[in-house]
Image 1 (cartoon, one colour):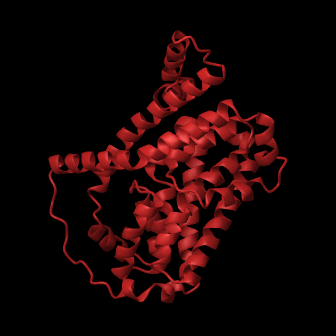
Image 2: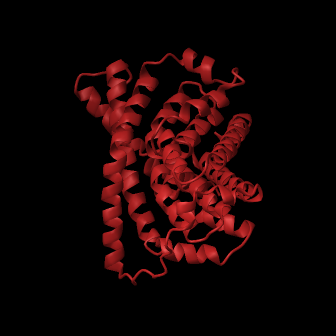
Length: 337
């Protein structure tokens, strides 16, 4: 048992967390004549370490996830989902969302395709919530920063929000609030051609390059903001606003996260720095969930496809779920970290 535990900690710290890289960059910063623990040296060290770590992990993850995704083109996914009814359909839609490495805006075209193909609105919303919030890449990256227990519980609760949210929207009879042009769109009935392993590898490579180009600006921005928070913002400020003593910290973090636009890869460095400075675990995770799931650009796109009542219900369901999860994590922070 001790050997397994030691092996797991080595994997988490040295493979996922790349602490060897942190030390290496620290020595490099010192060789430049900067103090790795000082202001400018610390900013440079944080920026280089987190940027390299995220891009390395992201490249491996997106390639693997995209290779898996090549087995689930939209039409095949629609047919799979169409075989299930009720709660099981919502669960499957949420799980399928985890193998789509998309941000919230990128998930909406698939949501539109599934809805126009006749899938129940609750099922399609379970996919729409799950896809940006709890993809497999987020699980591995969260493990590299917050540890295995936090990452697994985060993903589980993200799936709970997706399943419960989609089920509730279905029970509320929100089907009639989808825009008519979505329902009347022609259905695609052709199945994708069979792909060879080489085809799938090329598809995964193309998805990797496209994803890197798309998320790179947000990673650089997120790591830059995280570096400033980590090395410049006084810890007392963060503890006062987002610490356990502020009962509205989770609500505030969720509200701040909604108008922002980034994917989870860009928000993790910010969350990491906030947690280091004394913000509650649930507070920073609620911030991450709000940014990835309820970003303002994605809501504007979604408004084109659904009527205001359904859009409002979607926002309300996700917001309440995110806030509840945030308070849960804050209550159990001592047991999870």
